[in-house]
Amino acid sequence: MAVIASAPGKVILFGEHAVVYGEPSLAGAIDKRIYVKAEENSDKKIRIISGDYSEIVEFSNLKPEGRFRYVKKAVELVFNKANETLGIDIIVNSQLPPASGLGSSAAVSVATIASLSRLFGIALEKKEIARLGHRVELEVQGAASPTDTLTSTFGGMLFIEPTKKRHINIAFSELPLVIGYTADPRSTAELVKSVRERRERHPEIIDSIIAQIGNITRKARHFLEEKNLESIGELMDINHGLLEALGVSTEKLSRLVYVSRNAGARGAKLTGAGGGGCMIAYTPENEEEVIKAIAKEGCEAFKAPITKEGVRIEKEK
Ligand code: MEV
Image (cartoon, rainbow, N blue to C red; front, side, top):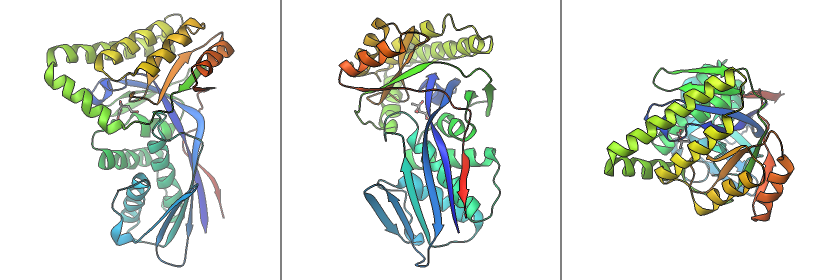
């Protein structure tokens, strides 16, 4: 038997980093997905394959290390839940650039949990898939908010309140966005650590920046729910300035932010952990001009419609 599941990547519209300190975040699933096929094999081992890379591991040696650390942790959690182990081939196909801030680790964790649990015949509700996905991220990278795993599981646009352990679906999701990709890989764990260290050095300053990012995110939720997009771009610009103050932008990211604004975007900011990876521009008009301006800087740019579809089973046979 084989099961294919897929889960989308995400962009954080508002609130990255501040969400690690309990402020809300606002994120949307994007129409680029990771597909994970789980198939029983006869050699009792776990074989993970993605493009040109592959690894064979014994169940007893499933340490969450190396390129496939998220997949391995997800496998371990599902095996524990099933109280059973099997030889499994896991084949990963991704439309998301890795380490880009577009939530590839959450998407691969969520899709692995969904495909494997279905293979074991365990019916997991989305809430449980998101919970296990978040556990994978926590155990692999240390600090992680539930933003990425919730968005990848449920899809659509979500306002996430980590302290209240809840998320609210924002029905409005037609937000024309362009993503600019610097192709500079970075580590979320390192960036979260760098903010923590800056906060330790200047708590009175950094805490107020974090609180202001929280205010921006709450205000953006309000505007999105009212379908009032007049100030969304401006809020993105302010949020970007505060992320620069946290030290997580880079020269290239901020250049893409500025060229996008100059090309007619209503607002732009880095998205995700920063330090490389991606930025987003809000482009109710001038979409093509913004894409061209980013390309002129030597970076890939693409439209990123928000998708309503979270994790789903694609095929089983
Ligand atoms: C990563 O996509 C976003 C951060 O806020 C970390 C997290 O929420 O876990 C930087």
